[in-house]
Length: 418
Image (cartoon, rainbow, N blue to C red; front, side):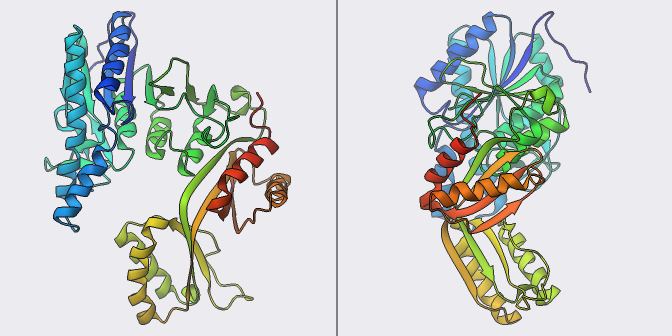
C-alpha cells in the first residue's frame, strides 16, 4: 500500500453525507459552507455523498416502467448515476468558495468489489490517487454506494452502501475518524420521533451499535458498522443540520463505556409479517426447498421457532418474520412449492412490528424478560413471539401498538435518565 501522506499536524476525516443532507441545492450549499470552514481550520477531508433524497427510488421506478425484470447489471448502471449528480454539484459549490475539490466515481477512486450486482462487497481500495489529491490540497468528493468489479463493471453496494464506502475509505487512508452525517444528532436510546425523552448517547460500543443497526435502527447500516469494527475505524454519527459532538462508536468493555444499565437502547423494525408453515420440517427436502426459494428471491427472514421437530409438535410447524412488502412475492413461489412437497396450511399475519431491548448479557438476566412482558401486559399489548440472545430481547407485536410499547419500555427501563 502506498505510504500515507498527511499534512503536518493536520487531521484527516472521511465525512459521509446522506440523501437528506444533500437533498436540495440549499442543503448542498449549507454542507459546502461547513466543509469550507473545516478546510480553513486545517482539516484534511474526503467526502462521500449519497444521491439526493428520493433520487435512487426515482431511478428504480423508471427501470420498473421499462422492464420490471431488468438485469441486476443494468440496474447498477442506472442507479449508480444518482450519486454522480450530488458529488458534481458539491464540487461546484466548494470550488465557488475557493476550495480545490474534485468529484470522483467509485471507478475513478478504484473501489474494487466482487461481481454481485446490487449487493456487492468491497474487497480493496486503492489510495494512491486519493493521497495525491490530498497532498495537493484537493478535497476528493467520492460517490458512495458504488465500485468496480474485476471485469470493469459498475457495481452497487446495496441500500445504505454509502456508509460502507465511507468506512472503507477511512480504513484504507487510516483516517483519524470516519464521520457519518445524518438528519439526527447522533445515536439515541430509541427513535426520538416516537419518544421525545429519548436520550442521545455520547458513546456506544461497536457490538451494541451493530445489534441496534441489525434490529432496525436506521442511523447506520449494519455492514458499515461491521467493516469499521473489523478494521478498527473510529466512527462518529453527527447531524448535518446542527452543531454537536454526536455519538462516538468506540471499542472497549462495559467499564470503559461507563454503562449504567444492561439495557442501552430500544430498536424497532416496522412493516413486518409473520408466516407460519405447517409440515415444513418433517423432511429435510422441504427445509432445503424453502431455503432455496428464499435465496432465489433474495428475501431475508428471521426464524422464530426451532429448526427441529418436537415430540409434541409432529406437524413440523415453523414461523419466521420477513418484510411485509415481500410477502406476496414469496407466497406466489410457495404456492407451487406447497403442491410439489405437500406442505400444510400457510398462516400469514401482516402489520407486525418487532421491538428489541439491546445491550449486553441480557439473556442471562431472566428478570429483564419478565419485566419486559409485564410492562407490555400492563399496556394491554400482546407479545406474540419472543427471541432472545446475549445482546437482545425481542418481541413481535401488532404494529398499531408500536409507539405505546416503545414509550412504556423506554420509561420502565429508565433509558431517558443519564
